[in-house]
Image 1 (cartoon, helix red, strand yellow):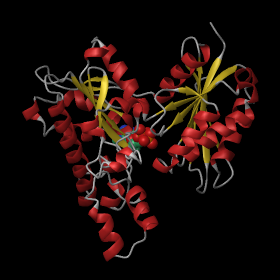
Image 2 (cartoon, protein in one colour; image 1 turned 120 degrees about the horizontal axis):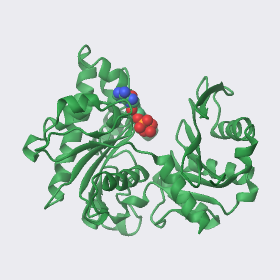
Image 3 (cartoon, rainbow, N blue to C red; image 1 turned 135 degrees about the vertical axis):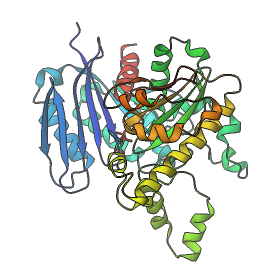
Length: 401
Ligand code: ADP
């Protein structure tokens, strides 16, 4: 067996996920999470050979501090692993209008990632920190860094679904359109579902609900994405942990003109203070919400609105399937674990032919996956996503070719 490894770096707004995969059997050798970045008590947890470790790093650690820790205090302390890293895969949220596939990182790709910052100001700059730190700390791998882009999966969405109904020149001249996000997860889950259902990818019609802190839903027809709920940025669509999802754009003018809020404040409200947290005023964490669903009215209302919006999206995507829907898939931290969310959002879809098997639905959580619908229903499946593995696989393909 090969003893070469791929490092995967997934830099988020306040966390970094990292993992090391064996290139031959694709097994995860090491995985970890740096969290609470830029906040008090920044922390790294990691697992190697099934043993868990945890370490506080400097308080309010930057992404660069955290990457320094990961490289010097974790990877270099396991020198055998460190020396055998032959490529690095980076999750990049926004590839802009020009990036069409996973790509070896070079100056041209870095420029395109920079150009897309206007569409992803929270994520792309942080993704770039991951790239710069890798190039600095692994100079011998300068042409073995690969960018894997969340937007790429959605490039097949037809014009009718990706152009906004605002004057055409905003599309034509300024590239304002639906780019979508979470594409790495949607793509991985689509391929996995095709294997689970034993159905040819080219004829697979499914709806994928990726529900986590950020949530999005995709319609896949004949193995390609034909619509998704996130838009120009990851703010549009479903209700999320702290993001509003769809709102009437006039609310922004109201906040600005009538309430006197400036644009920075409004964007902070819509991105960080809305969604589940904004509605219930206590928590964006679905575990807390599920626990307190029956004893706190606003907590209940927040999850009911979350599930109502999800039901509406699922049924609108059902309509665009036209002739056949093979399955509805739930994935992501909430989709994989919250039977309550699955029950509340699917209970409204009987007219579509969706009938949940309550017993199976309750059983499938905490790391278990599979069918949760009755036999006479459109199949509903819980499928585990694995964005890090998907990034590792694309990286292996590109650097070994
Ligand atoms: P992201 O990758 O977008 O940060 P995740 O996919 O890890 O998010 O999902 C995080 C969400 O999953 C949180 O809201 C968390 O509460 C929820 N979650 C995780 N486990 C459970 C569970 N057992 N029951 C309900 N929700 C859960």
